[in-house]
Structures are given as structure tokens and as C-alpha cells.
Length: 166
Image 1 (cartoon, rainbow, N blue to C red):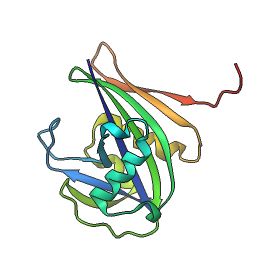
Image 2: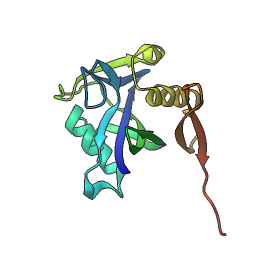
Image 3: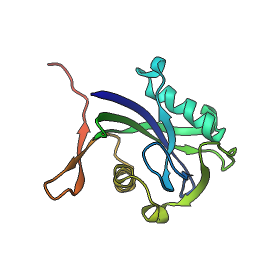
């Protein structure tokens, strides 16, 4: 089984989140919304934050210095199409609204109260909802997608805690 590692960022400015609308992808053959990011390069596998900053600059033009309070908030695990997908999800605040157009899709600043109406993948939709309800908690959460016998998906959340000693 293959493992696909990705880095995704959600950038926030004054109550709005920068979202990308893509017309289709290798996975979906219809329009959907997501954060900024993509697959990690082989040399980035041990530094997902650097992969995320690379993707942000490539897709939006925002530089590292344009972003504050950038931190890992989620590690998402999902089995999909015969592979394990591991996604590192970061949140940060931008100092301004100015982005460059992207070849990857169309960028929009979406008010936080409108995010749940966007068509996103289930795992991203639930992650954004979890973040908005827990944004002041410093923990990194691990979310694993599970499907029950009725084919209904849900995410199991676990907080990663620092351990001291053995």
C-alpha cells in the first residue's frame, strides 16, 4: 500500500479564510474547495512546515514573512483508493489580503461563517469545523477518518500531548 504525504495550509485575515476553488482534480471530477497545499517533495518528508510554506508561496505569492502565528494544528489520516493519506494541516494569519492568481485554482477570501456551505472533502470540512470550535487550544490533533457499517464517515480526534520522561 502506498503512503501519500501532503501539507495543507489555511490562512486567515480578519475573520476570513483564504480558500481555493478547483474545477477538478485527480480525485474529484467536479468543482470543490480546499486549502493551500499539495504533495510533499521527497526532500520535505521530514519538514512538512517547509513544504507548506513552499506551497503557499507557489499558489498565493505569500512569503513566510507575510504570515504570523503559523502552526501545525492537525495530522489527518485516511485510507482512500488503496493508499494511506497523511496530511499535515497548518493554520496561520496573514498580514494583508493581497495574493497572486494561481494556476492551481481560484483563490477567495471566504468569511468564516460561510465556510460550512462550501463543497469540500468530508475530512477538510470536519477539520475546519473542529478548528473553528477549538482554535484557542494549543494541542496538535490527530484525526483519522472512519466509516461505519452504514458507510457514514466520521473523524476520531486525539490530542497529541507532550510526554516527560518514561
